[in-house]
Amino acid sequence: MIDSTKLEKELQEKEQESTTLLELQGMRKYFPIKAGLLQKTVGNVKAVDGLTLKVRKGETLGIVGESGCGKSTAGRTIIRLYEPTDGKIIFKGQDITHMSESQLRKSVRKDIQMIFQDPFATLNPRKTLRSIIKEPLNTHNLYTPKERDEKVKELLETVGLNASFINRYPHEFSGGQRQRIGIARALALKPDLIIADEAVSALDVSIQAQIINLMQDLQKEFGLTYIFISHDLSVVRHISDRVAVLYLGQMMELANKEDLYANPLHPYTQALLSAVPVPRGKNAVKRERIVLKGELPSPANPPTGCVFHTRCPAATDICKQVAPQFKEVEKDHFVACHLYE
Image (cartoon, rainbow, N blue to C red; front, side, top):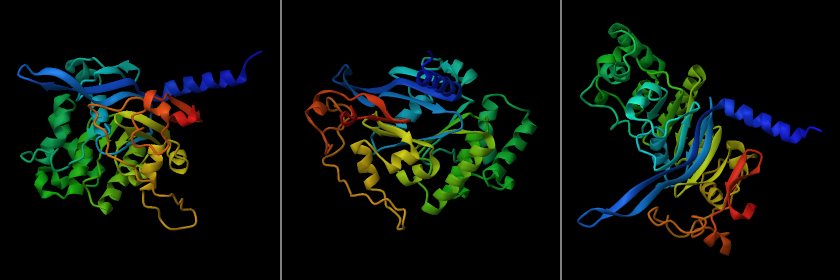
């Protein structure tokens, strides 16, 4: 007799595999601490410590957490700006963890792009928009020189800027406009995945909304997949389909945004969400403010057991000794906490 539950689970797993764009398997990024005259390695800063997740085609995965929790390092390691210390990065079914730079350029660089936090620092002030946006096209030898200029104008209009700005310099634009230029540059190679690292945190609130709406429109138009890194849970809620919560380089919780915001399971997630301002209204979810004690521990010397136990209001003896498993406790809702074992 066929086990229908088992068969259904197998079919779901096969469907997920076919729609998975990026998979991280225990990804780690440690930065060595060197000391002494010979600069001997005496320890490691464990910025990302065993990150495992899948990113599906066409979705927006939000990554949230306090400053110093490893969000940006995770993004830069995925795109191989940082070399991973351990684990695997599988993109479109291909293991890119140990690819050389030349291999990455041939097979991956076009398909993964990044939008950085600071639009003032990421654009070369000595180059015009023509040169800035055309640079990736030149690097990968796409189109003829004349077609590249037309492509730059097209990209400017796509992100809501006038094509006549093509010969202007970055200092002539506002912060929001510069971030649009950064988005145009990221779109130039028609990527499958864009990693947005605090892409709106340096902008005014009204401009943030414009950039978020633009990113959502572009996602529908070009079938993009986003990893959206932010410390602002309100922004993440607006743009994301699923949300991953990081603490000291480890994943505490992962769920669809509706489940995570309505029913946070991990004490750390509960504390983060309790600090989010709640609008007035009938459907507003009121939460008691949870104030975490102490400071974020150093990633160079993380606590034993559960890394959150030093600040967790629900911590027990086992939390100090044994690291909890990251597992599914509800449908598509994963958490690393002894409360659910």
